[in-house]
Amino acid sequence: MAEARREHFGGRLAIIMAMAGSAIGLGNIWRFPYLAGEHGGAAFIFVYIIASIFLSMPIFLAEAIIGRRSHANTYGAMEKLAPGTKWKWLSILTILAPLIIVSYYSVVGGWSIEYLVKSLAFSFNSTPKEEITSMFAGFISQPWMPIVCHTAFLGTCAVILTAGVKSGIEKFSNWSVPILFVLILIILVYSLTLPGAMEGVEYMIKPDFSKIDSEVILAAMGQSFYSLSLGVGTILVYSSYVSKNENLLVSGFGTAIFDLMFALMAGFAVMTAVFSAGVKPGAGPGLIFESLPFVFATMAESAPVVSGVISILFFVTILVSALTSGVSLMEVGVAYLVEEKKMRRGVATFTVFAGTWTLGCLCSLSFGPMNEFRIFGNSLFEFCDWISSNFLMAIGAMLFSLFVGWKMKKSDVYDEFTNGGTLRFNVRCFKAVYFLVRYIAPLVIGIIFLSGLLL
Ligand code: TRP
Image (cartoon, rainbow, N blue to C red; front, side, top):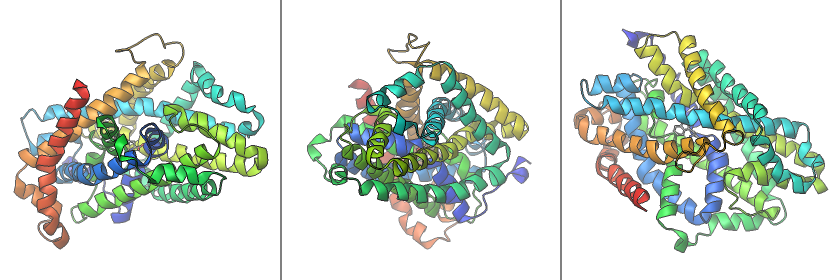
């Protein structure tokens, strides 16, 4: 049986580290600060936290329950738990979606390699400030360099994956996640001491509730799913490597807390720096690549060495966090090919690499030579981000919660969530969690999704 060959994570901490490694990534450092900046700061964060508790946590648990119950990849899980039904289609969605995400994700990962190299060369200190923001547009529109960086990023993920679950994913996350926290803490402490930093803090903690509209809710919900890696089978596959005696609620809660803490720390670090340099918070996706180098250049006027060191630390943090997430996105496809198509792990990894590399190159070129090619008015990069984050993830999240809430037997869900009734706290929470998974999550996602489509 394939079951006998399956690897398991080494223990509770290893599980949380691996899941946190998947969760913590560009979503926290790149996406969260710019979305918060575009959608009114504290008001967005408020909705984000509510959505994380009442929607994302239950969906996380639903995915984890499917994964651990089946101990299989997304396709195998559906075949085991709902043999011969149409639920198989869900697995196809969940194999394709993470591969689409990782294709453009690795392009951004590649940008962070380039920016790390730039900060190692202390280029933000030597470039005139006016040229810093245009430097980014100039870089991403080139045909070759961004593709070289994208290849380096994706290649590194592939090397980690080839090593396997325990000696690749687990080992890498075990040392990288704690380091990430130390790095972001250093950056945060430094940015809080910048002149004018308090304005940034205020922007992040004083909510203006009148700013909350359906667009803010949609963005905050989407970000909460994105950040916790929900809806496309990543958590399902990682949970399939969790052994039967672990507590899923603890893993889920631990991951969510780490992820939230990291997003808030990164958000404060970026916003205080941005406000301190007098840059606008609503700069969009270019926020950390355009505005932050500008901030580093401003800091360099008075403290060039400190600014140089902080910029290096910052881009190392982005790169390492993106790698652990890239690995988790690719693992969904790798697990499928290994278990269902009986490929060797190395071959499976290479196959996933080849496919995502090709799509990623096209995404990268869509900032330059292929910019004319539009899908519904979007460049290929924008289209991949849009279709995966706003569409596929929401559908996936809804279907996972419907599967656990309506398709699986309640007694099986109970059994998995409470380890056969042995976890007293989980037994007490079961009713509430089941209610959220069965009714609230699919309903709320459905309503918000439809209103987003219709608006
Ligand atoms: N959560 C990661 C981040 O914040 C990205 C990620 C990993 C992801 N796996 C995912 C996003 C699955 C969506 C779905 O950067």
